[in-house]
Length: 221
Image (cartoon, rainbow, N blue to C red):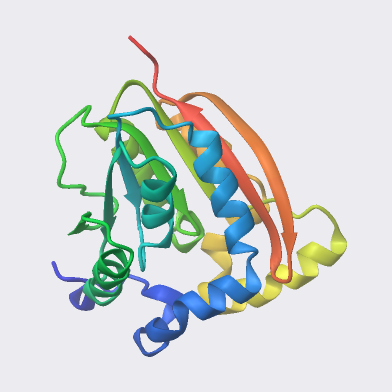
C-alpha cells in the first residue's frame, strides 16, 4: 500500500504541504545538530559496518552518519516518496552515493540480520503503541546478533516547563501516541521487542520538550 493510501501514515510535520519546510523547522526547534551528532557518536559505527536509518526523512541523519563514518554502508528508509526525493538530492549535493528505500517501518524490505546498526530519530512518537512494538520488532529482526539500536525521540520531560512545552508537539502529532513518549515507555517497548541493555544515554531540553537518546542491543546468541 502506498503512503497516500494508508490512513495511518503520518508525513513529515503531520501534513504533506509542510514537507518542504521540514529541515528548517527541525533545525530551528530541536537542537538537531547537537542531538543527532551525539546519536551518531554513541552508535560508534565500525569500518565496513552496515547501518539503517529508520524513517530517514530528508536524509540528514543518514548523510551525517556517512560523513562521520565514510567506510560504513549507510541506507535510509522512509515511507514518504517526497522526503526520499529530498534525501537523494541532499546526498548528491554532499557528494555521497547513498541508497534510500521506500517502505513502511513495520514491513522493512530487508533480510533478517542484515544490519550492524539501526538508527532512528524523531519517529517513534508518531506511532501508536501497537505500531511502536511492530516497528521495534522489525528493527530487532533486521539487526545482526550483537547489533545495536540507537534512537533519539521525545521522552519523559525533565521538568514542568518541558512538559508544558511538549503540548505543542502533542497538538500537532496526536496525544495518544505521543503520551507513550511522555510517560517514558520507549525502553519498555524496546525490551518487549527482544532487545537487551536498553539504556537512556542522554537528554536535551529544547523549545518543544525533552529530547532523549536511547541505546539497545540485540543479544549475540
